[in-house]
Length: 222
Image (cartoon, rainbow, N blue to C red):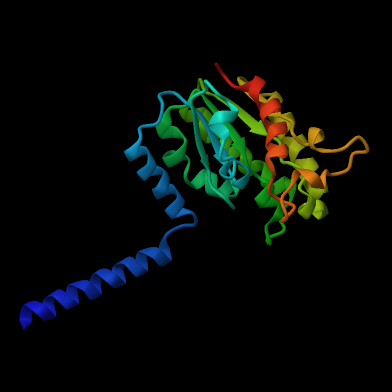
């Protein structure tokens, strides 16, 4: 009887511990653990090109087919902000010792309910950049500009400002790229192209990714 009670007590403590851990785990913790599990099952390529950022990378399911011959490791996790990528830099970027890091992030920062301004979002990018550059001094760091999402038409002033500020910052840094996908995703009149997006008017259809593929490809390190 005592053994049964002890066992039940053990299960209860374990359950409470797991529950407490789940409640205190930072955002996207499960995504990061999934990446680690994936790496344990299939070892990532040596010195890859790491794509990191938010859902526009997460949903690029055929990214390897889009860039054949390149050692791509996709570590985009949906809904993430620059703060989230900074939090996990030592887990999903640096361990791979990549030769290039391609970043798409910042859109969720600007669209957050906290009303983050470009002046607040850009320093977050600079922090992420500094962490990568300090630990990977020879890696190329490439930033894909924040895209013109129709569902977020109301923040396009902030988006354009952030893009321009990041572009100016990267111009002063060595071994970097600012990859402009904003202008190519507009029509001849400068309007957003609704046909490039799925029903939520935020995430892209294959046609949108086709544009990204053609623009990003020349920037990838051989």
